[in-house]
Length: 488
Image (cartoon, rainbow, N blue to C red; front, side, top):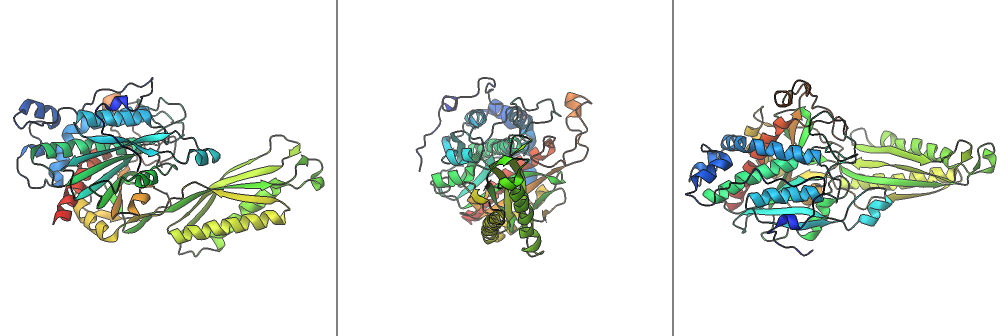
């Protein structure tokens, strides 16, 4: 396990970007002294749900009400994060921002998690990444079993944002187009509620908060598992994660037992021929014609070799060849992704892609190689028994009064590396609304209505901030309820 140290002066550990200063935490004011009523009021308000000294667990409605008091700070944090996105293994400012909030809440944490051990392999795949070590792990409670893990991913995407909000990305070519800024803010908000609980009536066990880098292709979750985030004492017995979900209505919650998200892999195909003058195609071995045949043949794997009752994706997303009008190049590159809802299905797709590429290229007198990503993502599996429990516990958090069982998605998620090791549940928090007006009162009529049903990984993606309070309350609710269940 990589060496760790407790953070006492977090901002000295990770140097923030010069252009974005780390503000003082607005969550500060946790009541550690039961007689310090003035300090308590600055944290959750005098009527906060946790002001009782009763050790009984709060209801979801209690937590929803308590979350309301910290929402101004949650919104400010999320917008600051949105304006300063950082891509995988380069989230130094983001990590420092999280550390500042945890310090303000007097929550102990460790940093240096998720070192980028696959930097060379990622570079070979033309994927930008930094040195890593930007993960943060905090703990609230007794420091003894049982232990429940709550996780948020923290990285952004290399996508130029179409600026639709006043706090749009200030980092050129990068944006939080998958909503991970909201995941951070929700978990920090939950940390505030949990710390308040710890300081008043206590927490019977340990809740581990994991702020994980490099979800977007860097397998940051796998790096943290390798480094011991689950086995660290007390060992994790159950884990929960969320994703804001523009595909279902705001206020609803979705998920399913078993496989929820797909196993994913990236491929890079190199077709090698013999280049020459475009006027003399008979004198060359044309890699472009071979590439066209390979791309067409690959489509038959899903369309003609996979049962219509099974799910499989083989998508070509990039083709690179040549740089002159009258020259047939020596080679071509084809890149893309394969996806399946099972590990065995992904292995079958890998095998067939390699066979199709080799044989089709050979038929066109070309050589071909296929290389894969450093870390294929396994399917994200919701433990069936734990899902049924979470479905009941989370039902009050949904505007429909139930967690909806929704179809699996062919998107990937590296929470899967955690779910492979411990019973886990990953839920979708609905954020879709065709005409969201939430920013208009604050910023003026020019900021809305906004369509928050636009898909993730799109330059016009806009997060519906109405999802934040639900995420704060539900993180807290699941964590406390799970500890109680584990102690029973």
